[in-house]
Amino acid sequence: MLKNSSAKWSGTVKGLHRTPRSFLPMKNFESLSLVAGIGIEGDRHATGEAFHSDRPEEGRQITLFEVETIEALLRDHNITLNPGDHRRNVTTRDVPLNHLVGKRFRIGETVLEGTRLSTPCRHIEQITGLELFNQLLNRSGLNAKIIIGGNIFINDTIEPE
Amino acid sequence: MRKNIHSVTTQIKSIQVDCDGVKIFTLTDPEGWPLPTFTSGAHLDVYLPSGKVRQYSLCGDPIDNCQYIIAVRDEKGGRGGSNEIHGLKEGMILPVSLPRSHFSLVDTERYVLIAGGIGITPFLSMLPVLNRLNVEWELHVCARDEWSVPCRNILNKYSNSGRIFKHFSLQGNRLSLESIIKGIGEKEHLYCCGPSSMIKEAIQKGVKLGDRLHFELFGYDDTLAEAVYEVVLEKSGRVIPVPMGQTMLGALRIAGVKVPASCEGGICLECKTRYLGGSPIHRDLVMSADDRKDFITPCVSACASERLVLDL
Image (cartoon, rainbow over all chains, first blue to last red; front, side, top):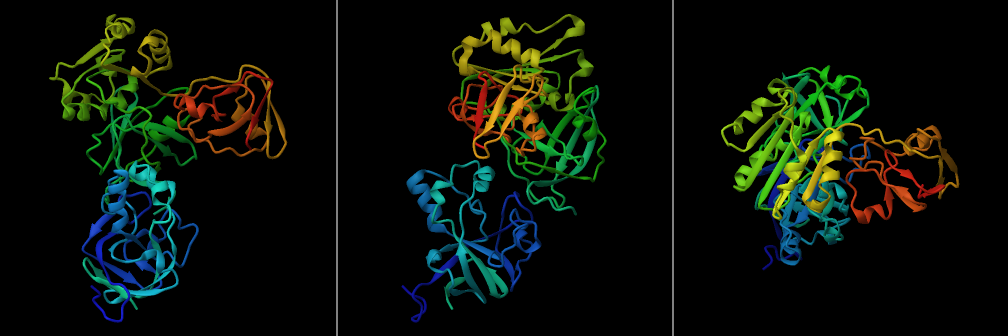
């Protein structure tokens, strides 16, 4: 059931996560504060403390991941990925992340623009101790930049702009 | 704060002087954030200010992911790493690697653990796990005397368990590895950590245990290339001689070939390199048999043929 008659899809925020430095576990939050053109307050991508911060990328201000992938890993591979273990900032439901490269969409009061598909890296295997790399190919989430900042919350609606 | 984006940034929260040239370091995140989790028997690489990299076992309970505890003996006449870490102060930032383990507990009914000197450290993260699993275990602690047993404060938590047996050489009460090994049942696993002489004896006398023998060697095993051979670099076509007394890694470095390396003791696999031909002599301590068909560790391994071809 579409929540907005003009929207082709409509999803929700199921998890919000951040960590201040590379390698550290992600913590779950009820809300995150997004700063346009920068990133998420207190997150490693905004502070230059991320593993890839020596290779800066405008399009990696915020990252998203589908909860459906977490469910598929359990269903198809018996792999349990805990919230935030995917190391992306926003866990979504009913959002076609792979279709949003170059597209703008809203989360609550904020507007994001998809920049590229996230790619899995061995880094996540090191941190979680799970053999995940192959299972995450082509469904490792979305990198985005923040066009309009603001606070986002669990259960916020996600829709095309 | 110094940025260490390719390592885990820790801060030295406390330094405790232990016995016999041993200091215990407690490391935390500078802002109290949880640290990456670890499993029993895990170790981490410590990146020292000089650029040296050293491996130390984690001595804490894996259930506590807010601190890493390492115990370091100042090895007189060593390669300088332990001496440097003994000079560090509380409050200093100390980058470390993610914890990893080549010395994990496998699923079995009973565990026999043997610790020689500072080799007690990996067992200290195993004991709380074994207790929670409610399985049978016994730990043999070998040292010169009671006062030279490292980390006694941690070990004392288990002193009433009746599972810890101490063997002090000054009292003439040396451990008989042979009798321990003879007593290992089919559903028991033997874990050894200590000096190379102890490990070599365990390997020699424990052949029949097969994969029920687990060991971790601390320190540098001075296994240098014993014969002259040449390393051929497939991609560049260069031929680099390895003289008597030189490691393959050392010869490559002298020739200006950069190979990432960390422990240089055949433990961390940082220098693991694909080989394409020749007869390698593997001296690493951790690579699987399958991996050894394709890879070699130039830091400690050598070559039995006249030439070894590397995929470099």
